[in-house]
Amino acid sequence: MGWRILAAEEMEEFHHKGYLVVRQALLPDETERLRAELRRLWFIKYRETGVGPDTRGASSPDRLFPPVRNVHEESMVLREAALDGRIHQLMEQVFGEEALVVGGTGFYKAPGSKELPMHQDNYDIGAAPGTSCAAWISLDHSSEENGGMQFVPGTQSLGMLRPRNPARSSIYAQTVPVPQGYPVETVCTEPGDIILFSGDVLHGSHANTTADRFRMSYVIHYVGVSTEKIFVQQARLLNKRGERVTRRLHKEHAIRKLFREPDGNE
Ligand SMILES: O=C(O)CCC(=O)C(=O)O
Image 1 (cartoon, rainbow, N blue to C red):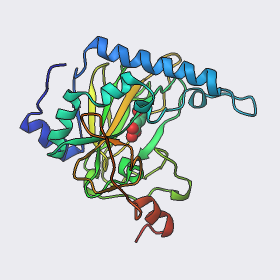
Image 2 (image 1 turned 90 degrees about the vertical axis):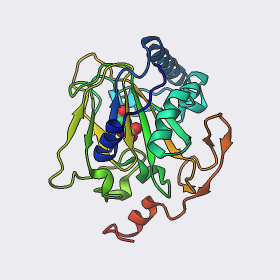
Image 3 (image 1 turned 60 degrees about the vertical axis):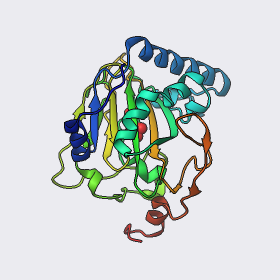
C-alpha cells in the first residue's frame, strides 16, 4: 500500500460510527505473507501444545483453531506488521498523536466456528485516559456466511457497557447486549482491507457457517502515546521504533469495577 492519509470525510465517518474500512490498504503479497505466517504458527502450536481434541476426545473448530494472542512477540513478520509505518500513520491520525502497539492477535475463524459475542476492546485493554484503536487486517474474503465482522455504530460514545455476565468474562469473550435502537452493521471485506475501530465501539463477528472457507485476520491493537495507565501489556508496549515502553498498571480498570458491583456502577 502507498502511504495513506485519511480524508476529512473518512475521519468524520470514523468518529461518527466508531469504525472505518480502509479498502485495499495492503498489497496481495503482503497479505499472503501474514496468512502464511499465521498458518506456520498454527502448525508449531499444534505440534508443541496439541491444540486439538479436548480431554473428552471431542474437537471443535474453535478448539482446533483458537485465536492466538500477542503473536507480534513470537514472529518477526507479525511484529513488522504491527510496526508498519503506514498503519502507524493511520493510527496517528486517529489518536492525533503517536501510537503504541499493545498487541497483535491472529484469528483463524475456521469453518464451523461460533460467533464472537459483542464486546468492547477497551473493557479488556483498560487504557486511560482515552481508549484503544484496532487495525483489523482482512486476510480472506469475509462476509456474514464465513464469520465477518459486525459493528454497532455510535456505541463508542456510550462508555463501557456492562456485559451480561462479567464474572465469566475472559479476553474478547464478554457478551454485551446491543443497546435498544442501535442497528448492527455487517462489514464485508477482501484480503488487504483494514478495518480501523475504536476500543469503545461494540463489535463481534458472525459464526462461520461455511463448510470450507476460513476467515483469517490479523488484528493489532494500539493506544495513543499519552496513555497513562493500561490493564494489559503494561510493561510490554512498543513505540513505533519497536522500543519497549512502559505505562502504569490501571488498577481501577473497568473489569474490576464491573466485577465488584453487580449493577455495573462504581
Ligand atoms: O476477528 C474476529 O473475529 C474478532 C476480532 C475482534 O473482535 C477483536 O479483535 O476485538
